Amino acid sequence: MPGFELFGEEERKHINDVMETGIIMRYGFDGPRKGIFKSVELEKKITETFGCSYAQLASSGTAALTTAMAALNIGYGDEIIMPAFTFVASFEAVLSVGAIPVLVDIDETLTLNPVAVRAAITPKTKCVMPVHMCGSMADLDALKAICKEHNLILIEDACQAIGGTYKGKALGTIGDAGTFSFDFVKTITCGEGGVVMTNNKDVYIKCDGYTDHGHDHLGVDRGADLHPFIGYNYRISELHAALGLAQIGKLDKILSIQKNNNLILKSYLEQIPEVTFRSVPDAEGDSYSFISWFLPTEALMQAAIEELKEQGILAGNFYWFNNNWHYIKKWQHLKEVHTLNNISNEQKAALLKLQTQDFSASDAIMSRCISTAISLAWTEDQIHDKGAKMAAAIKKAISK
Ligand SMILES: *Cc1c(COP(=O)(O)O)cnc(C)c1O
View 1: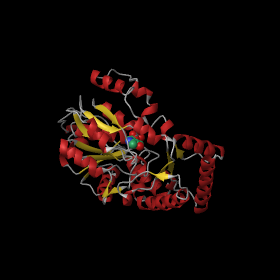
View 2: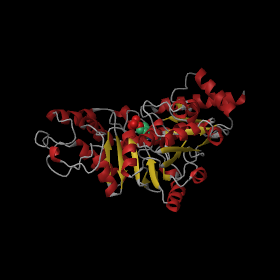
View 3: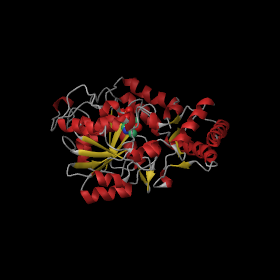
């Protein structure tokens, strides 16, 4: 999945363009920057590539999520329904706007189970936020129907699903707003960065101001800008945007290598009757950045992990169930409310409740699941070798 594996001349060229003038800031300095606007160019490219009306870059995917929430007027006391399997950034953003993360069970799509979403709706629910984990998507038709019925906002955390689609539309462009992350390990990278995509002009204008101290960006003199609302500094720099411009130019290549490598490796796993795969609501839309696969029981998966470890081929196979960053089971800091600053009583109470909430339905899925990350750097020989070794290790574990 990581675009950094294809770094080359193009990245250097775009960065050097910025260094020609030395104007690393995205706003202002219109004279000295000599017409170089990498951030503006990247935003335009994002709208064209993914098919949305507006794109607002931010300093990270987390900042993009926070910005989207603020722009959609999600804040104090509002509940956001989100999956128990995600990256910590998703709930960090919710907490940062004063809202309450309502974590619910996933299904074999590895993201929100629509039945669990429905059951979690209360009068305080304001938003549903599926997270398109590991390159593939949530059941968006079902979630959209729920949002429509209950008048809820839909935000897509598409940070891990750059290049994925659902029924012909890019993931991240389907909800009221959607975000990508361009951090170092994502499908395309700016080093650090993120984007909010939306088709709603009002939401976009708010994102634009929010990421830059509330500036209205209406005049030519930055110092004379008005501040219609309070914002923060979630700006991207021109150097990061330059990197992103080089990378977005390689997106088609990245996706095609990913698909090729994924399908070869998957063909080995498919030969094992006990191995099943995540369900993909639109099979055409997978970005192929991971193969997420299951064994019938947790015990068999543990045995397979031992065998993969023994053979020295566990690297790149992510067992999220025991991973500190991605699953509720290990989020002690969240469940015990280890915040540096004081947070609202409503947030505190909601987080403490997570300690006793039943996630057995998610445990039953995550404890049997591994996601194998697809590298762009593998040669075909390496993939065949890896596939054969993985299949042998899994079969050995099963036959024990
Ligand atoms: C990477 C990621 C983010 C945002 O991360 P940043 O590192 O802040 O760019 C958000 N959600 C998910 C699911 C992610 O994987």
